[in-house]
Length: 397
Ligand SMILES: *[C@@H]1O[C@H](CO)[C@@H](O)[C@H](O)[C@H]1NC(C)=O
Ligand SMILES: *[C@@H]1O[C@H](CO)[C@@H](O)[C@H](O)[C@H]1NC(C)=O
Ligand SMILES: *[C@@H]1O[C@H](CO)[C@@H](O)[C@H](O)[C@H]1NC(C)=O
Ligand SMILES: *[C@@H]1O[C@H](CO)[C@@H](O)[C@H](O)[C@H]1NC(C)=O
Ligand SMILES: *[C@@H]1O[C@H](CO)[C@@H](O)[C@H](O)[C@H]1NC(C)=O
Ligand SMILES: *[C@@H]1O[C@H](CO)[C@@H](O)[C@H](O)[C@H]1NC(C)=O
Ligand SMILES: *[C@@H]1O[C@H](CO)[C@@H](O)[C@H](O)[C@H]1NC(C)=O
Ligand SMILES: *[C@@H]1O[C@H](CO)[C@@H](O)[C@H](O)[C@H]1NC(C)=O
Ligand SMILES: *[C@@H]1O[C@H](CO)[C@@H](O)[C@H](O)[C@H]1NC(C)=O
Ligand SMILES: *[C@@H]1O[C@H](CO)[C@@H](O)[C@H](O)[C@H]1NC(C)=O
Ligand SMILES: *[C@@H]1O[C@H](CO)[C@@H](O)[C@H](O)[C@H]1NC(C)=O
Ligand SMILES: *[C@@H]1O[C@H](CO)[C@@H](O)[C@H](O)[C@H]1NC(C)=O
Image (cartoon, rainbow, N blue to C red; front, top):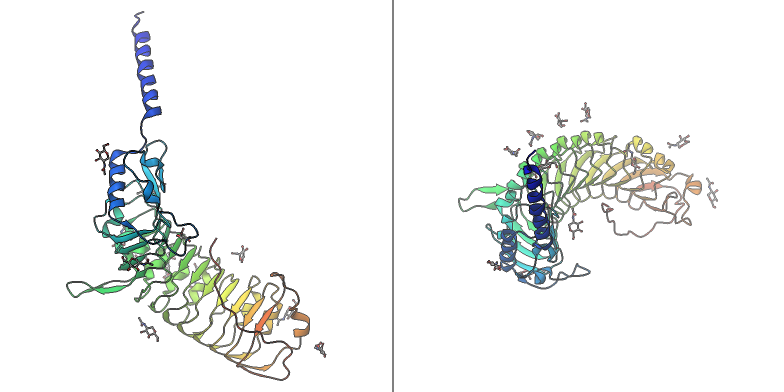
């Protein structure tokens, strides 16, 4: 036999050990990504720290050209390829206008991009979809304005999208005099989305019916905008939705009965809108329901007596009528009930003596607070009327 295979093995061994040796000392960061990040850094300046950060630290100060970018503050690289996969610039006091050709768009391996709690302004670039591997995009609490680019809808694996607390608007006149914008219809393409947060912006258009296609969505916060029109009935298809916040908008019309199909819905806030009609008898498995400050009529549906997880119900300031909703007193989790400013009438239930136990402060106990002022109840008032308290929806863990 020839010695060829032995020689080849030896050569391969030497070759492999050289590779191992060089792998131990080489810099992980890819030079093109290092340069793109350095240029991105120079597009902005360090401003004042956000007052909403417990620790605000300008992470980009550690971004210098003579070190491995994988060890810079806020950067995470893939341990094998060295590609930058995560950029966390939250609370970094970054300030300035985002440009449509920002060098950040060259870091196309990014999966997680967190720019929250800075002072980025301008527009999210239309070419954001070049970051096609993104699973999470968070620009919460900045000064972004103008439209949301519809191209976000083309990022196929996006799972968490947080645009809250900016100044996004739905419609601005383009140079051609055409209006464009709105919450993009293309968001209906984001079939992996679990969380969509548009809280506290300036959206004005109608809600696109395509959102009903987001079949994995668990959290949807549209509150504190100027969104108009009806809730599209297609949203009844969001079978995984648990948290649905619509308060402080200009919604109108009836609550679509299809929402009753969302069996996982636990928190729903519709307060401070222009909703009319009756409250649908079927509204899922709610524990937290706020319908206050609308124009709902009719009675509280008797079926609410089977919402066994209901802990907080607020129907204050509507045109509801009928007698006191006695069936609610059977709900062992219900602790706070607002009925004020409606047209309820008749006697208050005498069973209050057995039901109301204000001395017990355990959250799992029975009714602790009841508000019934400004109704047409008659007869003796067997309970204390408490002062109103701020109502804050539960956050999503
Ligand atoms: C970083 O340094 C390298 C040489 O060490 C240079 O080629 C590159 O242009 C520098 N990058 C920037 C953004 O200055
Ligand atoms: C954000 O930056 C702009 C200038 O770009 C400035 O006018 C504004 O006061 C800053 N906002 C905050 C909260 O620092
Ligand atoms: C989306 O995720 C799937 C599954 O993890 C992966 O195979 C695919 O390459 C991803 N697509 C993009 C554009 O990142
Ligand atoms: C976005 O960032 C803010 C502030 O850092 C944080 O509170 C929020 O949970 C983040 N959103 C998502 C979807 O992770
Ligand atoms: C995204 O949605 C838009 C409109 O809703 C549609 O025209 C487009 O083809 C969709 N893109 C993908 C990649 O599905
Ligand atoms: C929303 O309603 C308020 C109060 O009625 C009104 O001033 C505002 O113009 C409405 N906004 C839109 C976009 O319709
Ligand atoms: C989403 O839903 C709408 C109507 O609810 C439908 O017309 C559209 O084709 C669906 N698909 C996408 C990707 O938006
Ligand atoms: C989504 O909802 C609409 C309107 O409620 C309905 O017509 C449609 O069939 C539903 N689509 C799916 C996939 O369930
Ligand atoms: C609830 O879903 C079922 C089947 O998925 C459908 O037949 C029904 O029309 C839906 N109800 C409403 C009110 O949309
Ligand atoms: C109903 O909601 C409670 C929490 O509020 C949850 O533990 C339970 O699993 C939910 N049931 C269904 C069928 O979704
Ligand atoms: C309350 O529950 C009791 C026992 O489960 C039942 O007999 C009664 O009818 C219920 N009351 C109302 C108003 O639903
Ligand atoms: C409720 O309690 C008051 C005072 O403790 C008592 O006078 C009244 O008879 C009780 N009513 C019922 C229905 O038990």
